Length: 291
Image (cartoon, rainbow, N blue to C red; front, side, top):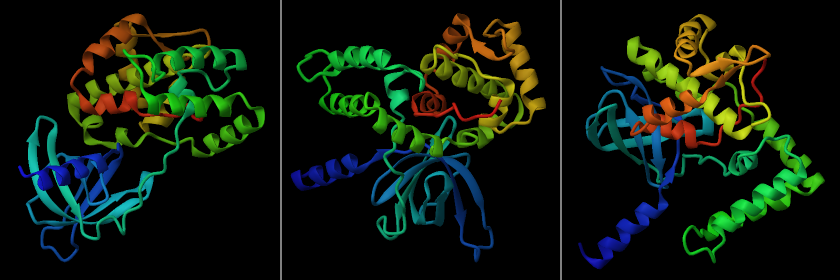
């Protein structure tokens, strides 16, 4: 590869941003075989996107890409597709190089980053910040990360200032989501595989809850229904199984909490499964679900 080509390829890679959302790909209404395929985005750049789908497209197909969660939309052309165990990876080139494509904003859940409760007091914020700042300080040769350190500093300056924290909390509450889009994928709905994935999905939510809110580490069945957008009858078998296996337990107020065995089961079960890695790593706000 020539130096010019190498630089161009490097620029394309640098432009890519991870982007986890449910997307819909639809072929032209004028087509004799119009299709609507629901998938999950992997990443995107100003010129294109990669999407995981349950079925392939033909190279050269014109599709309309839409992800309502982040206002992402635009016409695109299929440049390639690759078979994967969980379906297909489809590479898309945007026709207008991003002109018709809105990118997601850069909102960050500060409490999720610090792994603290939204109700954490100032002493807790100060203590956790000092611990993480020491880990990511640029002078730390083992784990230093200048970008992460700067982000932590901005978070700390906001959360220790009562007025700035109140303004941030108001903005955060306005963004609290309804159901999590990834649970709308076929992998969580159909057959035995769907049931197995629902179990892992419940454990993912309880895992994140226990890590981010140690003072309130459980979720009610109603909250799980709200976040996963499944009717209660679809979740009763799931939570009953998890209880019988001692992977979750009911705490005093009838909420569900993941156990140590459940944590081990989850961490082993999601290994190599990208869909759950994204769910665990994404900043999810679960404090707004009703009880």
